Length: 244
Image 1 (cartoon, one colour):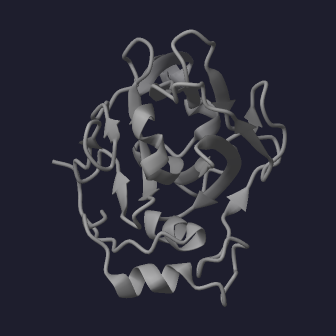
Image 2: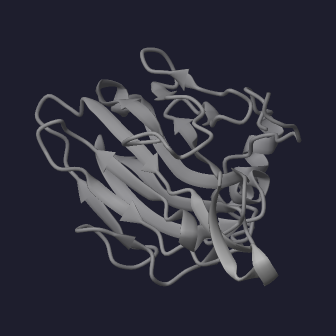
C-alpha cells in the first residue's frame, strides 16, 4: 500500500521529463492496453479525451461508482462426473484513485490500507469503503469528489484492481459510472477487460483544465500499483501488505 506522504525526491523523480517511457513525462513504462475499451457516449479510443465545462456555480458532488459480477463456475459432479453444478466464486474487486492537488499534494485512496480520504477537507475525495462480494445492489464501491473544491484538484487517476478471486476480467464485467450532476444521466465506462494476466487496470484520468474537467481514458493494465504509479508520474512510496 502507499504511505500517506510522499518524499520530495520520489515526487521529483516521477515528474522528470527526461524519461518519457509512458509518454506522460513519467519514469515508468505504459501499461498493456485493450483496443475495445469504451466510454459510452463520450470517447471511442484509448488516449482520447473530452472536455466538460463546469456549470456557472461550479461542479457539485461528483459520484464515481463501480459494480461487478461474481463468477459462476460449472463443476462436474455426481455419477461419473455427468452432473454439472454451478457455484459462485466471490471476487473482491476494488476501486481506487491516485490524486494530485494544485498545491502539489499527492496520494492514493483505496480499500487496501483503508485509505478512504475526506470529502470536506483535503483531498476533497472520499471512498465509500470496502465491498468484498460484488453482491450489493447498485454501486459496489464509489468515490465522491467535492465538486466545489474541484479548483483545488489537479488530476485524479481512476483504477480498479482484483484484490482476491480469479483473474477473469471478462466474467467479472466491471462497470464504472461517473455522474457530474444529479440532474443529468451519468456516463458509463465499460472496459473490454480481456487481459487475465494483470490484476490492475488504469481506467481514466480526470484533469482540471481551467476548472473544467478533461476526461482522458486509458484502459492500461499493470502488475502492481507501483508500476502504474511510475507510468503516470505520481511518485508515491508503496509497501506490501494485506487487508484486515
